[in-house]
Image (cartoon, rainbow, N blue to C red; front, side, top):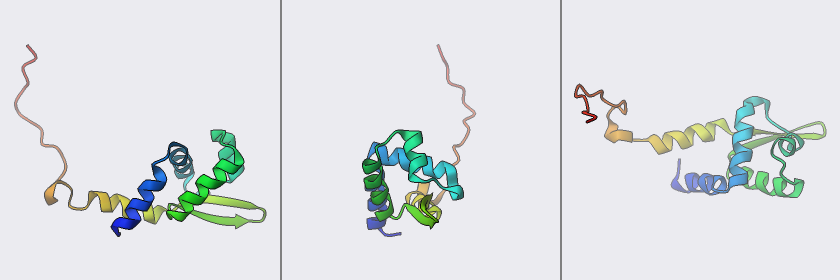
Length: 109
């Protein structure tokens, strides 16, 4: 993943309504949601939701499919996985990130 791709994703998610829309769509996974279902759950006005969905699509965070008269929005799982891998690449200097348990007890006095 390129830095610019990660930056575009983070910029798109850096607004509260867009983050809420994205998180809601992620919860539905492959089932996805229609704009009317999103409006019903989040109470975002239609024109505002349309703008936010466009921004999430432009950042490649969402996929959209037309089913008859409905648009179904789903998370772009591969981009989310790539973004996670990009963030955690070389995490902890290549060592295990599992915290070591200490044998020392902390004195609470």
